[in-house]
Figure 1 (cartoon, rainbow, N blue to C red):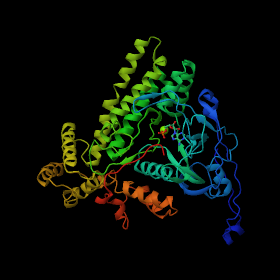
Figure 2: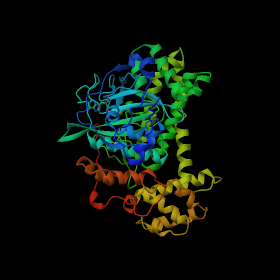
Figure 3: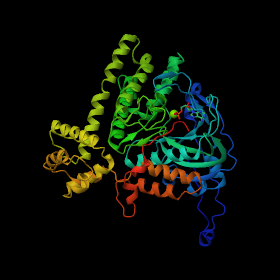
Length: 504
Ligand code: AMP
Ligand code: MG
């Protein structure tokens, strides 16, 4: 259960007093800790010396039954910082393994994070309340267990933008500055993120369970995942195969949505891929500006393993690692288990292709009955043109809606090769695209890299204004509003090539 703050007295309301916010009873479940104790290390957050709220997601807080005014109080901040453990909670560091850039690490786990516990949202669905940047745990290895203000606010902005875009994602409840400095290249102000997710089960969680050699643990983990995410699988003839198929389908759909909106995750290691199909762990992520499949933003991805255009293949590779982990549950005979897994993994490509094609058809405003081959050819040719002329993908798709309504100039002006684009435009317009429908799927506002950097730099030095304005723009990405023109524009030339940094 969430919190239930009593409302203020009538006198307090008349005089506008908000001095004392009554302490609600906050209770959190400990389902994961109870069902999977082998993967849950009870642990406590480090004391935040001077907690200060930098961002609070009031609608999300409300949906979880928290009173936002109470969360802003000293006690509320202590809860958000992990220093006030709610009733019934057993905060734990979760154990998981993972392939990082293709290399297997048998013991990763929450090095600087804690699962505080679970609580139901307004629809009765169970949600994890999790902290990132809450201090060292036994999984910290060489790390300091901390996080800086910039990266935590970055996750807040980008995850909330993704949610507003309709892409499944973990959510951000709050960012709290801890008052503790963090040493990176320089000394930076520290912060932690309170994150909400339908769970924190990862492909790496299954790799960890499998590596213990304890098949009953693996089975318990799979049962836990089925009940939390894919309850339909419990009714299937083969529940564990149905679980795997459901994860494959969820990830195929998720990555198709990333590709359609131009999102580059940047660090698609198996420990950063969920079983739920939510985007998780916003580190060196960024949105595409000029369309180019080879785009890499992360400073550590020198080989381009997680380049924009490689994301579907990276997801498929990760799902193969999940299949390997699940083999003992798929059949007693290992050869047979492999056959079953390979066949199920084979559904990833067609599911991904179907999701991407349907999404692209919507982005182009094409009629539902249009021949698939015609739509596919049109999309392919367009991508070639966009790439050749380094066209800003988000601006283009939005401008194309205007073109559908008759004004082709905003789209046309983005190209150098006008003859090439005019040919495409003519064929596309002949199909009668629906510009208004396009505006409902092609965002005006995404968290553009230069604006994210501007907002984080200002917040790090104490000015939260640019962050608030950016959040306001990206919270309603499809709704064009006067006064927000700079949030719709690509980066100025002088912003140059963008680089992002991981694990900070
Ligand atoms: P990430 O790349 O953020 O998904 O993290 C990969 C692994 O490194 C996870 O096990 C994290 O808990 C751990 N990690 C990242 N940064 C830190 C840090 N500053 N202190 C301790 N552990 C960390
Ligand atoms: Mg991670």
